[in-house]
Length: 115
Image 1 (spheres, rainbow, N blue to C red):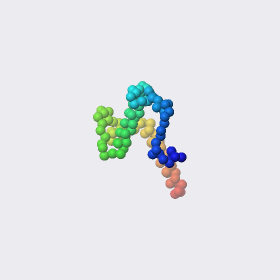
Image 2: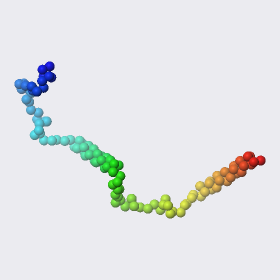
Image 3: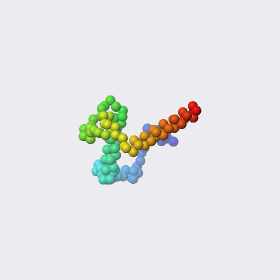
Image 4: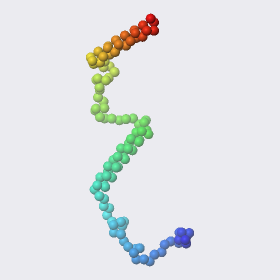
């Protein structure tokens, strides 16, 4: 109870085992890192860097997007606004059949309501 109530007193020890040296965790021991751990650390740091870039891009939309990739500036000649509309022949035939059926159903509905 005295140790708990008076932390300013400090700890005294005369046991020889309390003063042993640890040759693996001492300050002058050379740092040794496993190769797998180093690779994992590099992968994690690369992922953190990419996540930081995404976070900055999300939080600062006023910073424009810069791209020097040639494929980013390519044109799509099939889906552009000035491209002529090209319709498949089968789709055009099906559309004509559906419109003819709708017209006949409309005529039937008008005849039913106005005999």
